[in-house]
Length: 455
Ligand code: NAD
Image 1 (cartoon, rainbow, N blue to C red):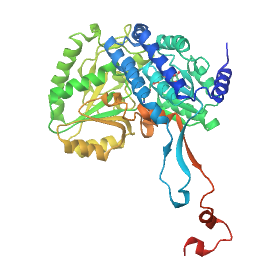
Image 2: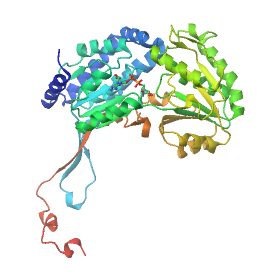
Image 3: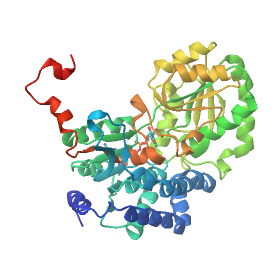
Image 4: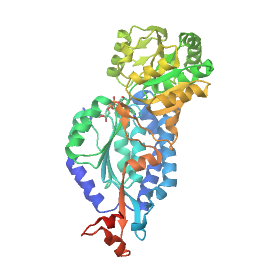
């Protein structure tokens, strides 16, 4: 059994041999990754069901197809992303070759979280492999079945010389982080991100942080309330609310809230039936610890349960729950909810809603529902967030052309599509000079005088 430092050193010497550099090597590995997913789809779905009772449809959409799409997009484009990028020149560099060379960073570490345990490791892995790195991936121990499957499949399909899986929890991750990596890509909570940064600072390792926070959802002006309810219910209760981009709370006027509540009840019944606990389309809370954390939040909240509220500890079940009369200082507003609980807060003017959002940390995503483009534009121009989507939730993250990542406390850096390739790439500034224009170049040599400056 290799130690963590032996794994990292082995990958480093393989990286130095240059084996990951050719485009064909990267293409072969990405193609093998595609086969790995296609050959083992049923096992992947089984592991995700074991970990989170993920409905098959949600798992296919958000764990399997999203990675397959990313692989197709990357395989179609990464050759052009690898090419040198020639830049504008001036008179003094007219005869030189001036370009940006894309180089892999080296040995990179990808640490995943449990809520989308397959996607959150495999999407960054696609980018890191396409960019020509050696990769260590560290699945979340909380989603244990997926962790085990990843550790079994990756060495079976991909080059064992270049890619390694290290399993374990906080202690193993801390030990792994004692080693020098060329980049650390971390997905998880803000609290753990602080210790990742501390460990990275020892080696001055650059870090991408994919974190969370409270994603606001603002409803304002003319809008089809039934449509809002369906899209809101889908994006909030997908994966039982355990999505980093799930709408965390709703801001709307009292009149909109009154119109919204019956539509939310209707949408919930249409989607999950009269008894959501028996619905096969609703995930469960990942662990007893997270179930207890959410129940504690509900207990401490001064809001009024308007929909749902039922729970079952043995089943790690919490019904899709909506609370009204929630104040800004309520327990539900202290931290990211990350579960099937949706508080509704009231405001009357659009400016009040914008001010509310701007008093909080910058969110990973911000949602606005309105038929009025002036409302959408006003929110877009007067707030900041990692991503922004009007009249829907979550869906913006499925497009590989858009960067996915946070800003401020919701994360640093981004990935998906070319953005991921760039994250795992060094852009080396290259100037290849010849001997032309020596008299012009000679103007910079001493002895200096003002004439040489053109004065
Ligand atoms: P988690 O418990 O799975 O932890 C994430 C990773 O950190 C795991 O691999 C775990 O082993 C490791 N870890 C835990 N404690 C550690 C420690 N002390 N030192 C080093 N490593 C440690 O997941 P979580 O932290 O509960 O994740 C939930 C959070 O992740 C939420 O805030 C959510 O919003 C965020 N998230 C963000 C994204 C995104 O893409 N931005 C995606 C998913 C989740």
